[in-house]
Length: 191
Image 1 (cartoon, one colour):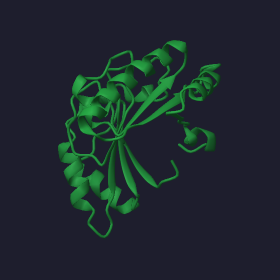
Image 2 (spheres, rainbow, N blue to C red):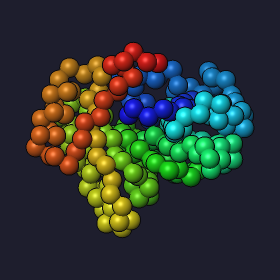
Image 3 (cartoon, rainbow, N blue to C red):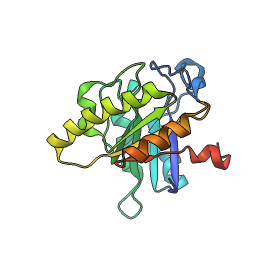
């Protein structure tokens, strides 16, 4: 939050969260295609601190060539850190500086994805999502024991769910290792 970012939203999703705010991204056939080198040039021209590859579900695509192209287009004097936001429902491809794992009950993550996560973000629309968050926290904690890295844990109230904020606030007050995540672009009116 608060960092200049260039978002690459890839079309196609097979997770289909009912509250998804980008349902238009689900059908990849409805969107134009870009060459990876053209995307890399756009990232370079924007000169952001980070480039975020998201979706839909980005790991439905093989991302190695895109990561390589972005890294080649930028240089040591102007590095762009690559971030990935994924549900983890597919195997990891590409090399990233930061991975946000946002697992969904609709299509759970593949087991090996947890070891790559730098942060866990669970969207909360009801009490059952808090149970899901706890189950995902246990899997992330197991991965942390193996990798030795620390993983941030966030709860994000679902934007259109009445009571989601109160659920998240109450949970975090009782579970201080969790943090609050907000969709600040919506609060600011940024698209």
